Structure formats: C-alpha cells, structure tokens
Amino acid sequence: MSAPSASGSVVLDPVDEQIVHALQIAPRVGFARLGEVLEIGETTAARRYRRLRRSGLVRVTLAVDPAALGLTVWHARIRCRPEGAEVVAEALSRRDDVSWVAVDASGWEVTCSVRSTAGDEAQRLITRQLPKSQSVLDVEVAALLHTFVGGSATDWAAWSTPLSAAQQEALAPDTPPVASAGDVATTVRPEDRAVLDALARDGRTPYAALARLTDSTPGRVRRRVEALLAAGITYFDVDVATAASGIRTVVALWLSVTPGSLARVGTALADHPHVPFAAAVTGRHNLTASLATRGFGDVYDTITTTLADLDGIVGYEVVPVGRRIKFADARVVGDRLAPPEPVRAQRARR
Image: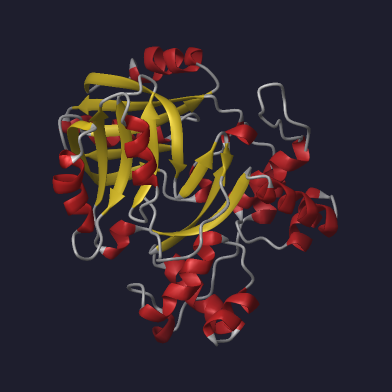
C-alpha cells in the first residue's frame, strides 16, 4: 500500500485493490485461498488485509436486511439552520437505528436512513423528536419500496475490476448444501444476536471464536449463519473508505418517474458503474440514487447521457453531498472508517 498523498488519501497498489475486490466477491475467503488465487502467499494476503482494516480503509461486516424482517426503512431529508446541521447529523449518527448520515454541500440539509424498530422508535424520531429540534426547519420522509442496487458486497466496485475473470470464478463461493428442516431460517432468533453482533463488527470473525462466544460448535454456528444468508435475512457488506477508493464527488439523485417506467429506470441506474445505491421510494420523488464519482464532470456526463436516454423521467434533483458522517453503519472520520464501537444491540443495514 502506498503512502498517503498530499491530500491525505491513500492510493492502493494493484495487489491491495485485488484483495478488496476479492473480499467483495467472497467476504470470508480464507487467507490461504486468497493468497493462492492472487499468487502472493497466505502470509502476505493476511498482512495486507489487516493493514487495510487497521488503517480504516476497508471493513467486512454482516448486516441484517430490515425488509426481510418486515421492517420499514425511511429516507429522511432534514433541512436545518446552517449552524445546527452538523450537530443534528452527529447526533443521528450515534443511533443504532440510523445508517448513512451525510450533510449536503450547502450545509443546510442532513440526509439519513432510518430503520423502523420495535416500539416505533423510528416513528418517534421522525414525527416528534426531529421536528421539535430548534435547529430543524423541515423534515421530508420517504419509505423505501424496492432496492435496485445496494444490498450486498458484490453490488458495486469502487474502481475498474482488478481481478481477471478466472480469478473471480475461483473466488466465487460454492453453493451451500440444501439446508435441513432444522436449519431453514425464517427470522432472527434471540440466540442469533450474539453472533450477529460480533459479525456486525467484523464479518471475518472465525467460526471457532463465534462458537466460544455462544457456547456452541463451529459447525453449528456456520450452518446458522449460512441459513440466514440463504434466506436473504442477512448479507455481507464491504465498506471501502474514500481515502482508498479515490471517490471524491458524491451526489444524491431524486427522480420523478412515470409508474410504467419506474422499474426500467431503476434497473438502468443499478447497472451504471457509478451508482452504488438506487431504490424506489414514496414521496414527491419516487426514485432515489447515489452517484459516486471522481469529479463533477462524471456527474454531468451521467445526467446528459444515462438519464437523458431514459424515457419516463419527468423531473430530477441533484444534491451534492458535502460531508459523509456515517457510511452504511460505519462512522467516518475524515476519509477513513472509524473503529467499530462497542457492541450494544444488533444493527440492521439498509
């Protein structure tokens, strides 16, 4: 891994990029297998990964899909007095039911994703707590209806593919065996919480360590985690810090699309290399997406080519993101991922 640049960012060398891309394909791949595929050796693979993680450049986590549990995800746009936006954003970022917190480039608007939880805590936050804040001028909320992209580690790569097709095929996880009746997952059980909490901090925690944590066996823990993954209740995610990805310009797109074109437009955005997240939502705009690029020139090109070529878009809004305070469930310090906070409760991700 190269030294930091003048701007404080880190430019990953080709091997580091290969390791991160490999993790996106197989988040729990063993270091022996990783070294074999990349032809760098097990010790080198382990050392480089640990350095990337320790430096706040990459993190593998396990997330729970709220939709799989019948919960609602809300996207809130909170317009604030300029002097209060940072305070509101920081307070929101410390909540376990809030993911992805950002302040727009003007310093007026805070955007966040809020997950409904037992006891309607999210509803109280949106309808009572935020509107009463002296710093808040207005709250606009949209419910997530359908996610086109943004629900797994393989949805998006931060750079051009550094792995060959043969390497990607070699890393592709094997199809797990058909689960027995006792292993079929339909929801998260109380006894799953300790395992999910540990994997939310580090998705590569060995099954042996998880077994000791829960007084179980590695085989039993592995089967349970695989059952939750197979049922779509959980998924592995790989967070890549902007210091490593080189992504410097992020904008939020809010589109108004005719009903007959919604699925087609959402799918087209999901296929775009600069779009890590796109979803259909309620509200005055019915589709939202994130556009992550290396500059506003790419944003302009996307608007004048990709969006211009899609029939059914009747209006759009482009909101530049100024500062990201929480990236998925990882708090951000500068352009690095902050160390995981102590486990308090299981966190589900959008």
